[in-house]
Amino acid sequence: RFPKKEQKLVKKNLINIVLKNKNQTIQRIINQRKTLSINLLTKMIKKECNICHTLIDSHLFKIHYNSHPSKIYNWLYLGSFSNACDINELKINKINIILNCASECHNNKLPKDIQEMHLKIKDLENFKIIDYFEEANEFINNCKMKGAVLLVHCKFGISRSASFIIAYLIKYNKLTLEEALKFVKEKRSIIKPNKGFIDQLYDYEKRITKLF
Image (cartoon, rainbow, N blue to C red; front, side, top):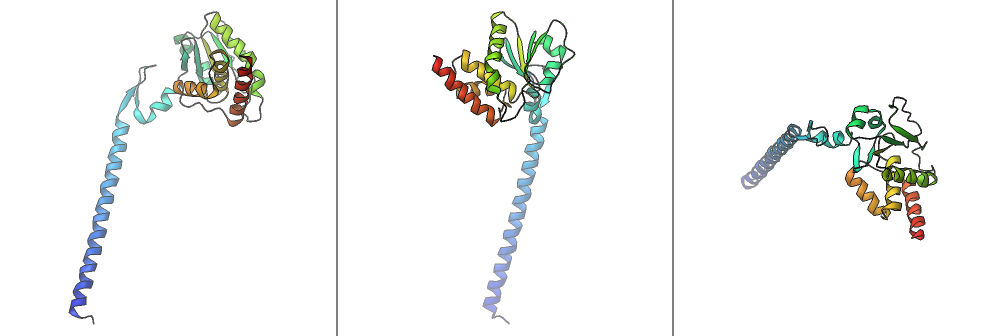
């Protein structure tokens, strides 16, 4: 047996360990409850969409907001194939011309008063999207000059269509790739041209810079 002095010390240490574990457990429970409360509160908070004026749960707001076509300028929108198929939304935004940048998307239900140009672009890093920049830029600029309202879209409004708008800004607004990418991302937070497209946009920027 331990001497009484050592017994007291062992007992004291055991009590300290138990109390420490108890305090840690209590604190862990408190932290978990705080996290649950914050998550619950976040889900309860709603924000109004300034496009459709629907109240949306805050944790779903970004997804909802980007489901609409994103206004780059008053005459230029960036969006998805579903936006191009939503005739009501096209009318609300007064969109009368569409630039379809997705090879796999075919819209056969457009009314006759909406014009469409279809570029069959694949969202692959090795696809030569740069070969289509001039054609698309001329089309986009002509839409601006004649006072039309244009929607540029691919399947999700993330890579292909964003790349064409960025190319347009590089040529006609004299922006750098970095500036154009930042500008468009501020308008539509989900854009992300694939790496191959970014490399080709950089090459396009260098080509355009040499012309001026």
